[in-house]
Image 1: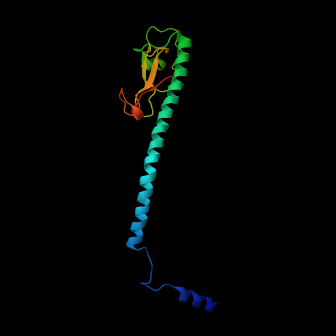
Image 2: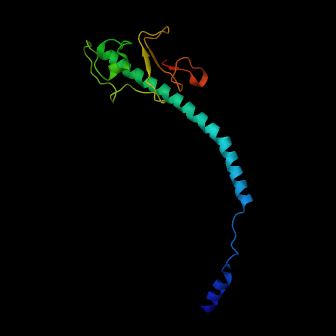
Image 3: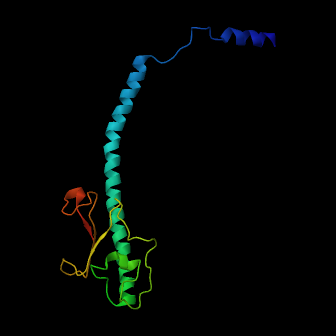
Length: 152
């Protein structure tokens, strides 16, 4: 037993003999972390942006289905003036309204927090109405990643 205690005492580190990281080692680690973040962060941001575009497209498809149910109940799609609020509150003079068709007290928002845009009749040939998101910019006329996302 005393032999074990002696071994433990001999292994103790003497004061002032502690080892740590040098400033150079810390700087190397920080430089490596900076490089990794610089390479990975832009790709992660790009993936996040494309995910929101996909979510906007899926939300538009979901609202299209809800508009079809509205049309089956009422007999026509909401007018531009009624807008998507017709899915929440019964528009004046509309019979057979069986809503609300969506939860909440306001029209659905796109992934960027902007309201979806709705026009009836459509300004595009072959469509009954236009349902679209203005994209990340929240303004009409965007291009590329800022382009509007329309119903099919």
